[in-house]
Length: 257
Length: 358
Image (cartoon, rainbow over all chains, first blue to last red; front, side):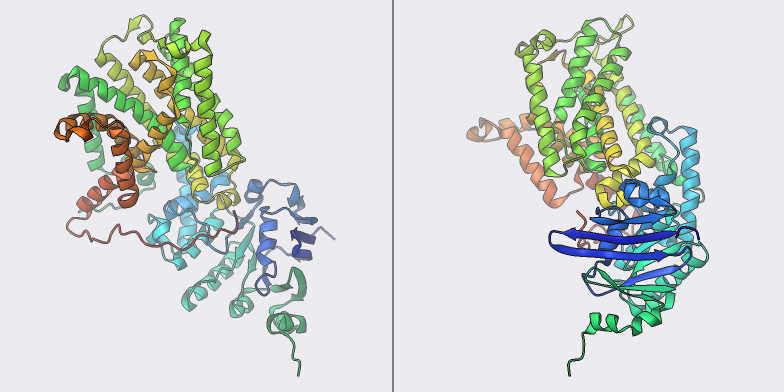
């Protein structure tokens, strides 16, 4: 049997006395949509921050395509093919949507500073090529209208899409979405669901997401993992996890009558 | 009203976005080239200083306005460039060689200062650069064998392979050429991947990093390029003043440079030059107004810094985009005419940024 494509093993991290994640173990198969659910403070976002190397775990391992991620510098994660969005949107506010998406192509940068200062033809060619790739993302997410708008002035729903676009512009193999539907209205959530399906089916990108909206979760996910207080409590298809007594207890408590 | 129909990616890459821009910048170039015949010797010398301060402004703008790293020690880089140029020119180096050396030396100093920038941020970085400013001031004062210390150092006129740039006009053309090349380099940088990486670091380090930007490398790069530009300006400054002393490169000077780019308009290349123009014109405007003021006020010490400070406060309160903001709004008004709405630039509350990932 070959090594799993993406595997988190026995991962723990502590902040002071708080065990934010303790002993999390799971695997993600290439081509699936894998969702993390759990009440607030369950450690879902912390897990994302561990994968994108913002936090250093206390113990455990994360392996992606045979690479030990804990040995990789944070800025090298994108080049390996892992892109992410943030729960509270971390866009480049004082730049246009186009610039934001072009920054997504940073890992494919081919020119050096000395070539850019005189803007040699090679730089122009590289810029055109990058723009073409970014336009594909713009077409997919219907962002044509906002191309030259400053991100700082855009409504929340659009920013959410821009952030998704920026992550896609890195051409990821694994996309981490931190609450893609938070703050979106029903229609926007609907669009988001379609895009997640498109991203998986057409772009063949594996999606690992944190999400609270259970209808969205059951609509797009292949497998769901439930966490509570840093620990994995259930694991399986959306229906299985929703019916799991431990999950129901974590969300609404136990009946005492 | 102007409509721009984009049919080609190159339209977003080009420096001039439309014929109108090409026309106005060409006109500006013609006027600047004709300045020696249009202006008096004195005003021409002032215009050279605007070019020099404009180059410093570009350097500081790249660092503070585009990479978001505040430096309160930039006069030190100006000093490194100026003294390097003065000392090398005295040893008979031709201008291009001594200037290149001054630029490289400043860039090296920039990298040295940039290294702590990888560990500290915000106000702590500002304090680190402040300390660097003090250290350099002290070195210039104490290293008498090299710099002449407090008694100063006189600088030979710029020498271009035996052709000495003696007249104001000759020096003006040199400054103009340097300013034009520096502007072009900065604009090129900003429309390429490096400039975008700088902007990314300014707006969100955390997501810049997750987009694959090596924070340490790009911050150091920003410091190096910024210091190099400031060093270039320093080399010109040495030849302009013909006399250097440590009190020209104090922390007060650094703060003034920072005020210059804020008043010019933070985060814009125009702002660097508008700020330079402002910093050169303001003392003269105050001098012209003094006879009109009542005696007690006219003779008050520190009138100029007070006015300077008041203007800065005014800009921060009412026009954070600085003088460039005026220009930008006027241009937008003309482009949209007659459809400009009064609320176009009303500042709106943006969504609270997360503090969790600091």
